[in-house]
Image (cartoon, rainbow, N blue to C red; front, side):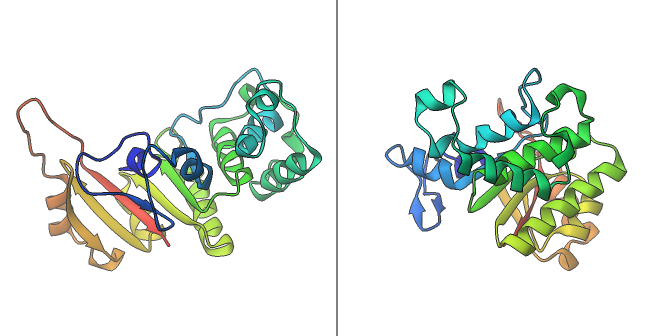
Length: 215
């Protein structure tokens, strides 16, 4: 689902709309410019500085050559510093990315997405590699971004307790089918059993998922 929102996969039937635009091969660049992605394993370039990693989120505003040569304008730097300040890592701007803890690296990933100035944030299991305390901090940060910036945040998540605490809307998927779509207070054990009941199909077994959406 997340890959289809970003145009990495196109649906075999139906259509996906992002900000009233149908996602297709003709407008992928524009759509992806409006959609920031936060990855489970951070997806940072470890040998580069935190700041350089965040500036990668500004590529839609730069030419391909400028991006490859790490040529960024002062306005790009300003946006990057603002994003880094939002996630509380301003003092680590010039450290190598691999010198940060897992939680700090995920914050850099969030800052990179914010520097893109997206309309939508997609987070693919953003706390799966983190300890419980750090997981809660990351989820609180995503909730704050949604509430304060008005950015829609769509998170693929399996930690049901975090879903109940931070989501405003929950979509339960199993083998590509929506089995639940509603508010967190409707997410009872019967519903969870439906979402996580494994359905095996010949040559096509898919993991169930919970998606929390802040709109």
